[in-house]
Image (cartoon, rainbow, N blue to C red; front, side, top):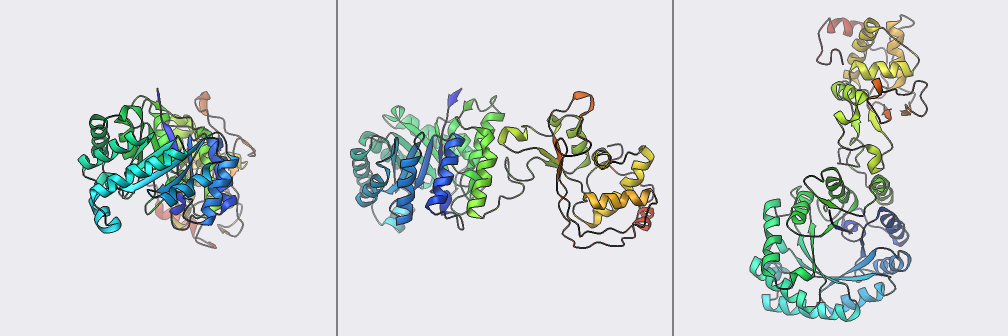
Length: 453
């Protein structure tokens, strides 16, 4: 399997995401975790941008010794010199130079001609090379650049000494097939390209950053630039965890490997969220809180029998402690019965049906049914006391295989992962004196779609 270099730009492009700025100690802390994660390159910042960014790059260069430490610079002398001042203490420094090449950027932003752009790019790479052997060049907005001119620029900077050429989809404009074709065009038309690493840097404006990055890899790129949690300008960057796990889970289609320690993905995500205060969306692939959570009864039943029925990777493989079965209105009897047993109540099928009917009615009223709700329902079925549901007392999630009185025993040895029934508080506030009995009778004997699950 071919090795893909993972270039992490969480501390540079990721930090440019609104609300995600980090101070020097926070950047240094995150850099140490990226080192433990096993990324190959850490882009530590943009040294010319501020004194804080300069100090962060310098501190990371001095403290984090295994990976390459990169600093970003525009294609001008003062930026490149400042970048080198910050990087010169690194064990493996890299100067990353960029210059826009699309006509729209040349005309409206830089106000220079194509020839001036070409000359400036070559001069910048020459200067960076005089300080550092490892020089990366990025033609900004490459996917909206005339392909012939893009190849001309890439060939010129390769001749000037660039060791990595990064092709950025700066505004998230391209599509996977188109981006793969662009990488192939560069490989076929640029002299000397076989001696350098082609990289891809994709933004997620159309939700295609990861797909575009993988298309670039399939077309011959051997470095991918990405961020933890996919943070970055506007809609963000390609998500590091998604790229890494796509290759890990589907080697039959993506026969590539990385040095990333996948078990550190979730801890890295959690650390970044804690530092920035920006939460991960619940349905985020790999590291979102719902990525290994199951509420639908059919799914829960399958999970209890064998987790492979609904999970294509184990939660532990990405550093998530356990799968979760969430009790809600889509849950089935199998998960409900298991939770009742763990609370010390065993029922025959008829009794469980009665508990389930009350459960479905209550779950229609609140988002999640918690342990104290469930105990009230059990009391109703056993005629111990009135159906009054008090939503005041919070119940913490209980790891079944750790602290429950009735640990999970997957049926017939078919399951292999620990399960967590996570029941957060309802958002409805206090729910008291629900007319559960009447509502259950209104339900009648209707056969629900989860019968037998």
